[in-house]
Amino acid sequence: MIRPEMKPWVAGIAPYVPGKAKIAGRPVVARLASNENPFGPSPKAIAAMAAVLAGSHRYPDPASTELREALAALHGIEADRILCGTGSDELIHLVAGAFAGPGDEVLYVRYGFAVYDIAARRVGATPVVAPDRDYACDVDALLAAVTPRTRVVFLANPNNPTGTLISAAEVRRLHAGLPADCVLGLDCAYAEFATGEYEDGIGLARAFTNVVALRTFSKIYGLAAQRIGWAYAQPALVEAMHRIRAPFNVPTTGQAGAVAALADQTFVTMTRDHTLHWRDWMNGEIASLGNAGLRAIPSAANFVLVEFPESGPVTAAAANEALIADGILTRYLAVQAMPRCIRISVGTEPETRAAMASLRRFVERASA
Image 1 (spheres, rainbow, N blue to C red):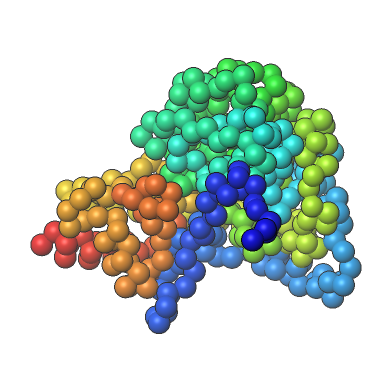
Image 2 (cartoon, rainbow, N blue to C red):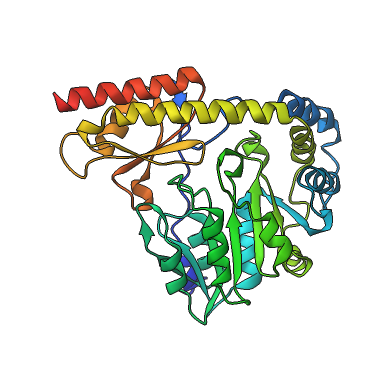
């Protein structure tokens, strides 16, 4: 029988598997699988979105003009070098689609964000994975993997799903080692949670013609359902991405909510302070279970990656089942070739305490 056949590079894509949001037959006590803001959006953002709902019969501003101007004012950058997208996911696809194709390579570090592989394969490019260094980016390994066919290098910093961070100096060293015709997509979705010496990509993107800084409103701003991301780059890169982006790609509600969220930096500071405090607390709780073989990977994001023993009674798979039984949803990472790891988002204080109490009970029972 003759029938349509998908392209071979599309057949090679493993569809993205999101974190669970429900548990069959029981209530969810804590939803900590997707690194969402547990407080939701700013009340000002909610009010702004409600105020524009009556205009839902009209298409949104295709250029996201007011949002780009608000971003430019907050970050001290040029509005005409900003491109908004349907989450930073769309922007990742735009980078790959504008600058890579069949015969080209897209490079990223092992345990990088799963969308990089999908974005590369979607345009017929070859994904190339560089070795990591204890779940973190190894700049030397990335540079060693660059070939004349490398057209895009993606780096999430802080990284998802590991939470690891490399210094500003290392980011700049990576960029300096790349060919001038290779785009560095610097994915800073978790930038607001990073501390210390940090490169958010804006300075690099302003100075160089081959850097795209990527950001999102899905994390600290609590607007994941609205799907809003933004990119900052020099005009030629923005123009190339603009050519292939979807029209009217950011909804009116999202644009209004994002503008209001940017204006409420008090809410942002509250969320950040809460996250850093409870992230540190989680690290301490996991460290206290170290005798059972648990290890918290140092995180600069709004979650903690927990590594479990490879075998024995205290495994990640068993812990995941125990957490689910207690109504706790976390991210078991076997789907990303990390069967020893569970990623736990920072929730509200009650959610975070409940998750750690459930994990402790599991370890104590399994170790008895």
